[in-house]
Image (cartoon, rainbow, N blue to C red):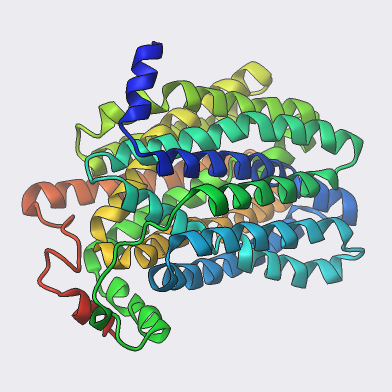
Length: 423
C-alpha cells in the first residue's frame, strides 16, 4: 500500500502537490461556512429558507461575475497571483459576515463576498491543467477532489463544535485557513502559465475579456454546459437546503449533521482515486451520466427515508455519483480549451456551479417553505434525470461524430491570435 502511495506521489510534480495542500487547508474553512451558513442566517436574523435562498442566490450571481473576471485575469496575468489574491480577498470578505448587525446590511456584504469568493477558482483549475498532461488530468482533478474531501472531513466537524459554542467562529476559521493557504502558494508554488508570443494577445487585458466571445461561440462546449448546470442544481440541494431540512424536519443537531458530511468526505477520500482510474478508461459522457444517475438516487432517498443510518446511505449514494461526474467534468472542460484560454474556459465551466448555487437554494427555499419539504428531494431526482439524458445525448453524438472534444483554438482551425481577437 505504501509503495503504491509513493508511486502515485512521484507521478505528479511537486508544485501540483503543494497546490493540493493549499487547497485542502482552504477547504477546511470553506466547508464549515458552506454547511452552517443557512443555520447562521436563520438563527441570527430570524428568517426562513426563502430569505436564505435569496442571499445565496445573490452570493452565487456575484460569484459568477467574480469567476468571469478571474478567468480573464488568469489568462492575462498568470495563475499564481490570482490564486493568492482570491484566497486573501475571500478570507476578509467572509470574515465580515460575523460583524453585520442587521439583515439589511447583510445583503450588500453578501454581494461583495460573493464577488471575491471564486475569483481565484479558474486560476486553480488552469494551474492543474498546466502542470499535468492530458492523460494525467482526470487523476489530477480526482486528487484535487480528494484533498477537498479531506478538508470536508475536518471542516464540518470543527465547524459543528464551533457553531455549538459561537456560530460566528466558523467565519474566523475560514479566514485563518484561507490566509494560510495564500502564504503556502506565495512561498512554494511557481507560476505555471504557458508562455506565448506577445502578438497572440493584442489589446492587453481588454483582449483577454473579449476572448469570452470565442468561448460563447463554441457550440460543443455550450452543449456540455447545459446538462452540467442541471447536475449542479440537483447536487447543490445536498448542502444548505439539506442542513436546514435535517435540522428542522428531522431534529438533527449541528454536530450530527457535520458528521454526516464528514462521512461523505471520508468515502470520497478512500475511493476517489480507484473510481477515476476506472472511469477514465471509458467514455467521459457515459461516466457523467452514470454518476448523475447514482447521485439522483441519493437525493431522492432523502424524501423517502428517515433516521441517521438511512440518511448516511443517501449521502454515500450522492458521494458515489460525484466521484464519477465531478472530476470527469473538470477534465472535460480542459479538453475543450486551448491552453492559452484555459482560465476563461474554466471560468465558464465554473458558471455551471455558480448558476446552480444561485438557483438551488431559492428553489429549495420555495419548496420547503410552501410545500411538503420532501418534495424538494423528488424534484432534485427529476432534475438529475434530465441531466442524465443530456449527457447520454452527448455520448451518442460523440460516438457518431467523434470530434466534439477537439479544443476549440487548436484542432478546429483557429490560431491563438485569431481566438484572442474574438469580439
